[in-house]
Length: 429
Image 1 (spheres, rainbow, N blue to C red):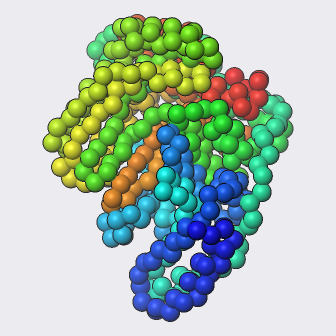
Image 2 (cartoon, rainbow, N blue to C red):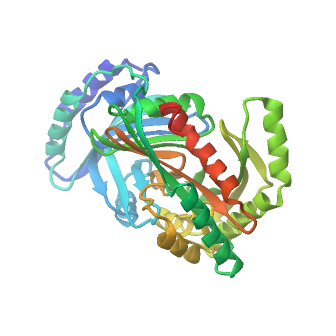
């Protein structure tokens, strides 16, 4: 176990020993001391893409930057994974429609887990491993030392909701009419809030602020370049696959949370008893079970539990199954988007969203994480923001079923958006 700077020197020395002019792949790995903040280090780098991913249990975090290979869809990534060593991970995001992906094999990874910290460097070439080693040496030479993150501190100039409150009420009325007509049982509708600030917003600084207060969440950032990034703090797992074991969940049904434990418990008790929220959650369970038919040898649905977050609380039912085929391409195509973020049945709900929602979701309500032959995990990209210099777009959605009330749902999406909005400005909500 060595210091970070010594680990970089060790990697340089190992790279200089690579002489093979043949195609191939190789990982160089050094155990490092568990010191310093990898997010601060990641933010200091001038190479992209950059990715941060922290598990909701807090036991694993990854800072990755640079790319050896890039994939624009899950099919390409699956083919690459099938050729790579079992524990090599391809990281990135899939958009809501699951038609576009931003997935990559990172050049360098700083990984912290229960077993310690590692610095990993990936080499992969279809022509000459030696040539890629030379590229990697230059990459290491360009790395910058870590520097502290300044807190997000900018004045809010403009704030605009799409749809606005009146438009939201009309949208909910349209959804309830479609539900009453039997076109669908549930649809998840979203709102974007576009904010413009007095100066550029640091994606890493906003994420650092979020991980300090939004506990029990997957914290993630995908920075495409120095000006554009997608970040979030999501409570929801899309799926975890370990070999052929599959774990997924139905996270649907929401009530406000509270800093006071007794008040939060009162809200949680109401959530457990509320018929509308229970129906909403069970629709997601039914949807997942239907989609996994034929893919798994059996399914087990756990009893409902309440997940308490900073601003809201959710109903969750965990679902476990044994896959007949270890394919992340199949898992993603069958599970994304779930009824928790789209609706049920899937197709009419998606058609309603495409027709009536007045914006494009892009990465919102998609998935972000990693795939490998050995193990794969994706969270649902919720409680998120798209950052473009001084502009920030916040996303939040609510499940609409028979009996939903437009004003209550507006308050729900306010509470969800507050996970990030309150960290930017008191005027951002």
